Length: 164
Image (cartoon, rainbow, N blue to C red; front, side, top):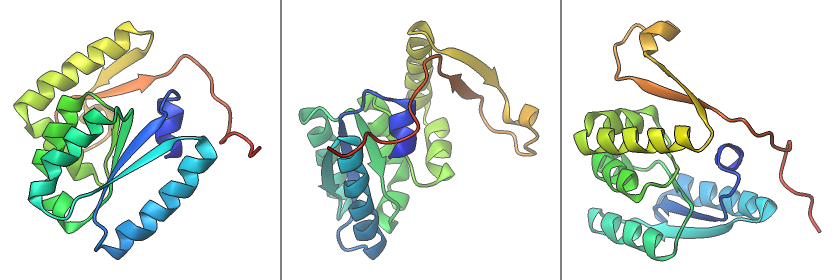
């Protein structure tokens, strides 16, 4: 939550994809609720118990006007990773994924790459400076698609607002 809020300070409504039957997800959602309260962010937990719940969850995200999404790790989100990444990309919202494999799924999806390029161009035109670099230039041995590193111009405070 802190990373999302630091990168996107205007986040006010956060959707969380989670599986209530997964113990880790239940604990992670509880911690996210605490952080959301500290950052004054409205939380929208969306239960995803089966593949049939993925698309309705993204419809609810759009309908409730979430400003960012967190995807919690569980067997379902891992299995349907390409579908989740594709829907998240179409939503044009900041998304925090639990594993780097989700980013790999984004890079594998042709529609997602085109949408990612549009989002990057929009961000750069809004006052972000960007540096395109290939992971091999950063010392990685594996060849991956090009990635975008954004640096923000504005400054942020060091933590959540103080409790009233």
